[in-house]
Image (cartoon, rainbow, N blue to C red):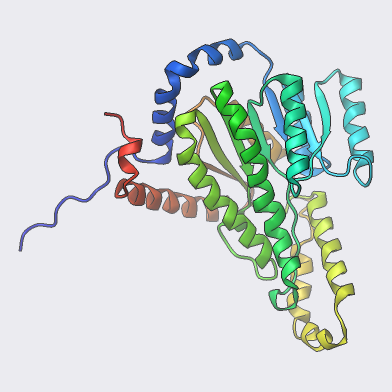
Length: 336
């Protein structure tokens, strides 16, 4: 029997090399804008800055000297206090933070916010796509709209913002997109099926984007918090659960009772871990943004459960290497 032919993928098909090749392909066209921007104040747009990681990142980037567009929905309503706090902080510490209305569920809102940022700063160097929700509960008891709410905000909302920003980054000659995901984009937590599904969508979309945008000198990285960091995120999740409970009719009560122990475990899991500091995640994002193009990992897990997530990410990276290396796209990602 003849030996099996060599089928290993061409060297350097990994996502990191794809991005480096994209940078090389775009270098001549982008060199002028890149050199012109190096000495300028970095421009960062962050979604979901009313609390939690987003709020901490807005402060952190601004304290490092960036011009920050801190976006959130309902700045004149429920999030008015958060918006005013950020504005007061910016004024008191002389930080460059501008609060903008942005609802990731609305095409019009996203377009208006991005247009406002571009009109003010001329470009967006770094997008941190952070806005997200968790709508928990047994899938059986969730009307499709409630299950879908996770995906509408966390996945479709994220892609809506990214798609609005990419043309401006391409015109500027470079850009960095940092997408907030979760360890639950890799592992499934019962009673959080909709949330896990939304993060699986985000993970897949960002893999594709990383390849697709490389030649435009736009880098995509995913951050996976791996722990129950104490933020308003969990509290909002409990609020969504209570809304679901209130909407259930008498016919649903017997099924609800069947899930009594599951619900108890779910609520315990939504309790924030007071031993964790959300600043750790914010600092990780700031560090990721500061890395040189072509050196960023495609994924960065942060938190107490990284030992479980990192091997999964490594296995996924190897799978991508093999698949792309044997696909029609391989020739697009190798230098001649």
